Image (cartoon, rainbow, N blue to C red; front, top):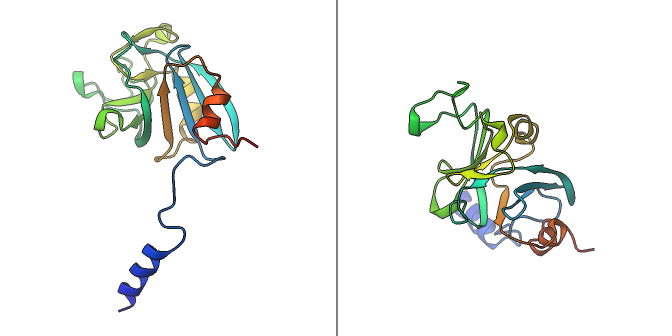
Length: 170
């Protein structure tokens, strides 16, 4: 009986469901394919902007609002059977996967690279590449559930963040 009552209270609770993410102050990532920049927003403000590499062609890196579903340190590269930590591993030292194109976070992601000269260019097969040092510094601040906006826009980062609710308009 207690379990049934608890379930009813949860469903009828005014905080159920919790609502859309992000809320102002929550972590939020914007990847702008026009400038090949990743912006990390947290605590209601832009924390950092770093250069990234995106898809060789405009359609390879999916656009939309996604959710981080998987994180990994020294990720394994399945396509070529390369262990994490191997200098030949193109995923670098960190993987932050998101659910683009109805995938589970193991297909599209933000990751490091073993080719730092590729940063700032259109070279990937769809993922977002960062310098290993940059993704290592952000990794712990991006929890599973963080929203990721991938766009091709001429709008300012602040304008996009306000439109998506990551920064308060006040």
